[in-house]
Image (cartoon, rainbow, N blue to C red; front, side, top):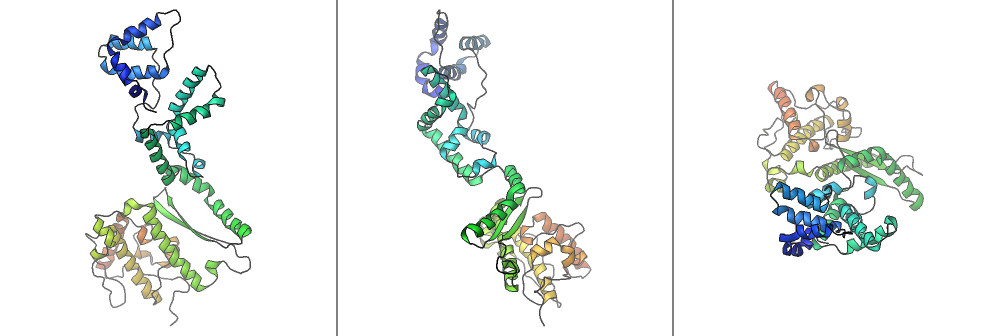
Length: 382
């Protein structure tokens, strides 16, 4: 349906010069005809633009019976969508339909249409007739309104509930949902499940990765603990999933200086990496290197030091190291009070803080990073 002032525009333009007299004459009758609310709104919107004298404006409001304009009229599609965007997580448990969207996006327009239709019928039973009137309004939307509904539907299905609602719901229910799902899959289908789940941590804008697996029924240990190979597989898979999740959940932090840098992943800009005679990496320059390239440099520095200790090419178990850095690293390897993260999750300020600390260690000819212990199974058997 078109906006009322657009629908009546032609008629209103014809009677622009005498609309005050028309309404005044109607009001002078013993039983004046009540103008439809929609027509009143159309008159307000159309004629108000031609009134400049304050007395004329007051007279118009007196003739029409002014009502507060507390509706969404005049809102842009973006403003209307933002105001209607549901915050309740339960709304998103199923895919949002166009009917779900229209009832929220154009709620006021549907309510007004329903009241007008009930006035025409001479009945007042909102519950009985409202759904039918809402369906009528829905079927007769204008192309512009249909486009608004389609855009909102696509956005709500893509983004889901607002971030603050998601964070609260995840905090309360994530563990229970994962537990229930894995147990239900086992009981109902005989499946064994391995789940990697990731989500944002709104408190510090970092990433949380969770591993959930089926409890063993016939085996002594769960899959990830049943062999060295499985442990290694899970460690590497955990790191790769964390890296992918970071790109998925924080895409804005990975849009570096240009599309070219995004294509080559920053590696083309990396300086030459040099090891000293003991196998520790010398501190390279990092000025001008894009953020993702700097993350790679930090990773290489840690990796070289881990190799010195283990004498193997095993990847660093970042999940364990980040969880207990004092167990794995010499205390002077990091700045005081520094919160260690997987290098692929570090921001530019984190890298700069590390670099300043390593510059000081470089000046005293000390290794940048020293690993004091490694994950069981990573040490060389030599």
